[in-house]
View 1: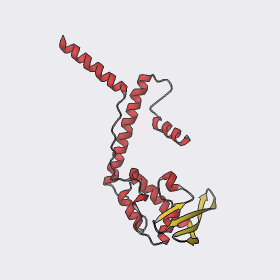
View 2 (view 1 turned 120 degrees about the vertical axis):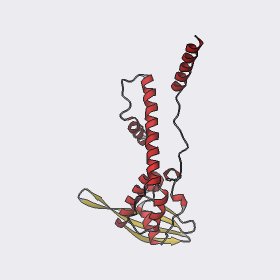
View 3 (view 1 turned 180 degrees about the vertical axis):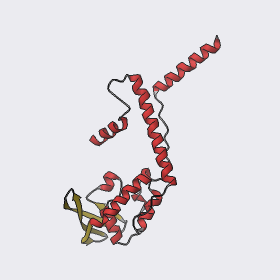
View 4 (view 1 turned 45 degrees about the vertical axis):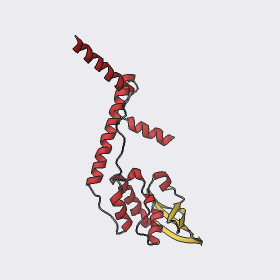
Length: 199
């Protein structure tokens, strides 16, 4: 809930202030939506026409380079670079489920902190779950999962790990939302137009 509130505040930052009238707010809201669509359209264009170079020899990076939007691919590359800080050990294997212990070194200002995670790998479905929950929360694979994929020599990752909302080939199907104020203004303009020409 707090995250949603902060993102709404960021969304309206610079467009809305406390002394606005309702009419001004509706106009600014429409302008804000229009600007957001323009920014997203430009980002889509850049993702389709500019390719960010790979930083590793891993095939799955090339796979994500082709499908991810540029912004999401940069996030993915950061996780890929942090892969070097992860140490992965097989703890147990029961049937097709393997359990791994992940030790991740994180640099905080002047010191390094080691954090332990547990990762479960279902070999049958090629499915991984990490206790860091980055994929569930941030919608991107964590370095711990990438470490196990590399360890298991899996070069092509299942499509379920690339969510549609981050694909560069997925065109957004929304347009600007018309407000009721726009409809009222349009009908008033039409009435004025008729009155002028009836005279």
